Image (cartoon, rainbow, N blue to C red; front, side, top):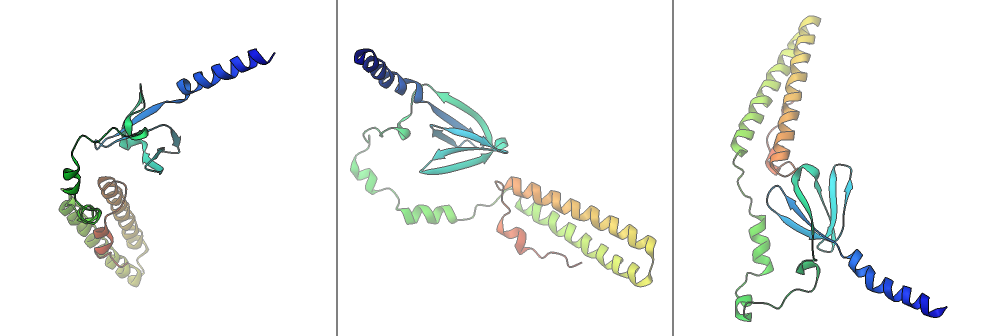
Length: 184
């Protein structure tokens, strides 16, 4: 009776690594690639284990997820280094890499975004001034007209905010809040 059980257990031990060793290549639309052994969908994001933690990206930022035929080396032990140790000493330090990463890169559409935001802000200021005048004159019809204009401009500003956020990887850049907002 013990022999068949031990054979089944031994077979299970040898078969389980074959069925449990999957790896996936997750490719982003910007060209970045990640390998992981597990990923899942959560709301509008794909999340996966990487770099000792969990990464998550919006689904529209992911161009492809491919199951790999074998586990690539970042998930296994890395291959022996192909470069001599002298080359490793020439590599930049962590501080140099961090400093290079914090240098703000100019976005090609930044000036156009700033110009558009300032234009909308100026229009909002003008409409707010007209709304105040209409309230002083107690012109209900003009108040309604100015409120509709104000709502339209705020919607336009909200849409611009979404476009800027998408262009900057899902977050508003620091310059967005630095620009003066209109005072209603």
